[in-house]
Length: 407
Image 1 (cartoon, one colour):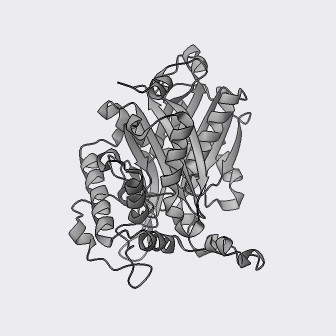
Image 2: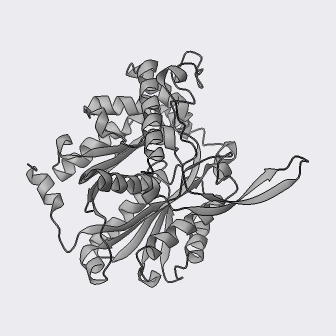
Image 3: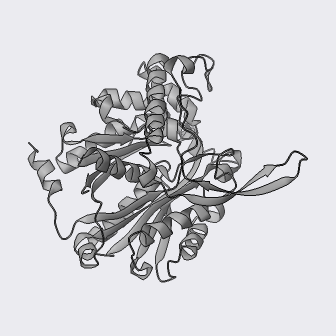
């Protein structure tokens, strides 16, 4: 029997913010994978076009677009605007980019949802994109920060390498290496099984790209490939195989390449509308955006964000943990994912049913939208209704959102 709060969000109202489509590219390994030679604006163009064309929506009816992007070239908005125009969306549709680190894609969807809720627009797209091949690394950092600002310890902690924040979580909360490796192995195992069974296919847009490689005589060659599956997923990963890897950030640490999220490239887009508008236009309704919430946490242990963001979004909606059918929690690191799941008391079989970022990858600005596409796909396959997405956020924050599947 549903709780009153769950019954309330399952009810359909004309002013609901509904999801008409949600699509993502495959997620590929940065610098090695299928999108290593593809610019982020082209990936974004593909998912923007698919978001509206897959449901036969006239792009002139899209009023605004928000794009999550953490490592933008040229300030961000220009490349995203170029992508929208290339995707066949007219110049009358406005656009902005947003950077809330790892939650940027979810922030973009939240922005569009709130614009619809406020009556500012009827139809919009929340999207996310990242090429960590082209944007990630030392060149993305400024040459200096204000020495005066850095006298504040918490401000200085915002500059900690993410791997060290993972080590801070594991040491502060006694998250063992063994539990982290077990969690990471399970992520790979679930993702591998799902991929082998074709369970990701419905959420992935196949994209034809040009890949550059060196020939035997050293000359650069171009070849066209169809990228239609996540290429970071590995079969046969076990806790025992991960136990052989050396710590990556501190000599006696617990975080390594196998229990941390992969550096990746990818894009995703979610088309939203007010329910009565979607119905009038004959658009399909895949689900409903219910609510999102953000919190701040100490920058040094930024990974704990979901442990505080999830209770906040549940409190705001009146829901309890038992009302939620499953959770998509971003696996920035196994340390923080284990901590959050354990602290909240979420059954592990309700978390990342098809694996998470450790196995699939974490293209920073894309992840928040990718999780929605994945969540809706999982809900349809398993007959689930209510799910939560959440992630920690670099510099010390967390975000979580509640969605309803109507498929």
